[in-house]
Length: 418
Ligand SMILES: Cc1cc2nc3c(=O)[nH]c(=O)nc-3n(C[C@H](O)[C@H](O)[C@H](O)COP(=O)(O)OP(=O)(O)OC[C@H]3O[C@@H](n4cnc5c(N)ncnc54)[C@H](O)[C@@H]3O)c2cc1C
View 1: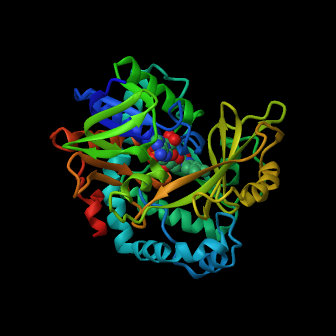
View 2: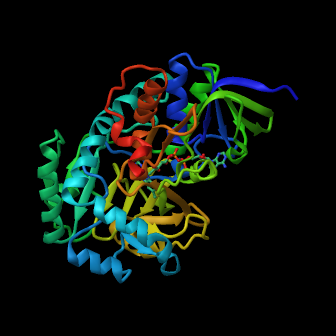
View 3: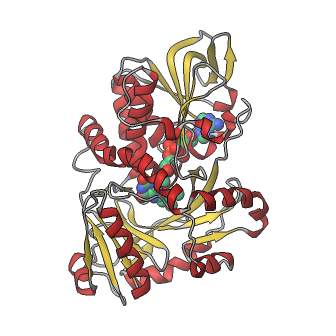
């Protein structure tokens, strides 16, 4: 078989890999995108809540207040569960996450990521226009986060007041205001914060596929292959694919929660971990309409009006990435979601499970691998990979092609882990 040659191999065709591939291609690089699946957007990027979180300033921090901590420890908080048998594996990572969530360090992470967040929707809108998927795959619904107790609402309003300093717009709503936005919701609401800026994608996997199709129309190639076959080959990199081996001068690791399959054998001990999460679709009953995504903060789930049905997405499960699914949070959320919104027949046979790729300091790893010429990292986008895929793709491509990066890349360097 003939050996294919290219400039750059991008490993992983989720939102992050596709975003990087498109931006490299725009800068004149010949790129081959590789995935173990025969289509883009079949991993974590398929199953998220579809929110382009353009109003998110502060990352998802480890709580430091006693009441939620106790609930987490007792496995009683609906937003977070952990698998007891996996806890020893997670504890050192959780300790680092806890330390990185101190007010000063969390602010540092938030400020590092803010330029990317601010760029997120702009980048998506540009790519969506080029991929000709507007308006079908972007709804400007904003995001409604509601609270059932005065205490949780007060915390949310305080956080919103802080976020306002960084340009985040929003409205605090009372129960009437919630019903005015979402007339089909029922419940006892203390109030909500409504953020108008976030975009909503009703088919996140479809969006990754549309971006991959754009990449293909512009001459990019997509091949099925296993990234674990990657090896150094002189001053190039080589990988086996369904169409034979491919070599490239440079390679980008963008395999989200599976990125360790490449960096670990190469000797990097990067503290990548996962926060698993689930979704499940149901039909809306009768004429009931959900206008946009809503977070039931105290009950720990999001309802989102996807093309496939109303998608319930859960909070976080700390468990080993490769353990079989344990969708307890879906089971807990289902009756609560039915009480909140008129839901009918299930659409899915069983819940889908995904794994948010996370670093303890809540920032992705983007940049050069220090010990391997031509190796680049772009993974660990935690709760914001749909949001940030195209923006971080731009940042990485600017670094790889010697352009001035639009944001300071130093906080994302892998060297921060020693
Ligand atoms: C329940 C849930 C809700 C979420 N909601 C949101 C949201 O509303 N907004 C938001 O911005 N983010 C959200 N996220 C986070 C977001 O989905 C992730 O951060 C994002 O999908 C990560 O993208 P990725 O491209 O890095 O990884 P992935 O999409 O997982 O892509 C990695 C790719 O690597 C491929 N791969 C793996 N191993 C190999 C191998 N050996 N060889 C070749 N290919 C391989 C996989 O097949 C996959 O296609 C949510 C996540 C979850 C779980």
